[in-house]
Length: 280
Image (cartoon, rainbow, N blue to C red; front, side, top):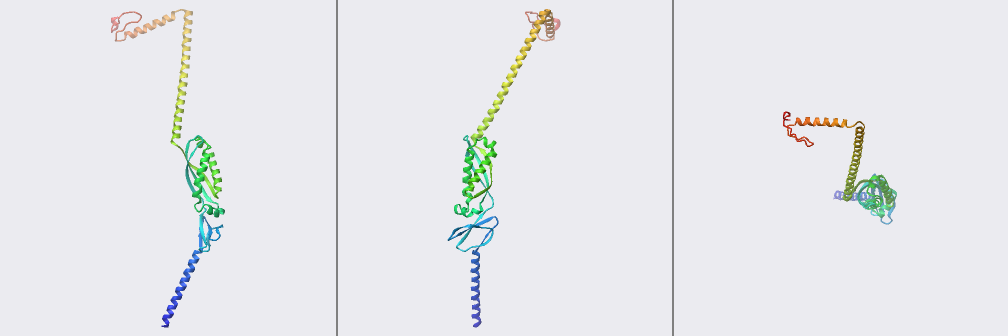
């Protein structure tokens, strides 16, 4: 009887000890939190509100129920968003912007108070679109291509300044895509076609001018030749011309004699040439 009471007492004490150890372990586990590498924590106290100091990497203590940690990722993260903006000459441009952002560590409590954990998703798309529209409106559509480094620099400078107002640090800002609307692309194509037609017209005009000059030079040459022949005939008589006429007649007669067809001599001579030379 005494041994059974001792066993019951031992088991009861063991259960109490186990319960006490379990409760102590639960309290200890609730009193600890871990901050991984590349992260920072902000503590919220039920009585004092958000504590101004941030908590660094490692394992830390807190008061259970009274305090609660909120973990921030402070590593640089990429964000990409698109915008449709109007240029100075009223052309619509599609732009894609990529930024690398991270929170300002010393201002994490303020970020948590005003924006919460998803601060970047709430701020960056809105200020990015605002800055893109403001900068693009300062340039014509063709200047966005010819002066792209200058446009990127203006976007970067303006966006970094705007993000600083929200305690966000931007490590890099870049325009990754730029395209125009269908109407502008069609207008550019029509402009290129018009330029090609203008160049072709210039070539046609230049060719006609060269042909005109060649005709003038040829006419001047023929006129000079006729003048020289006239001067020569005036000086030495018509003997050379008569010789050329005789040679031409001889050549014509030779050609007609070899022709199998019937032909009539020019100049009113109605002598019929036969098919062979013996018929003449």
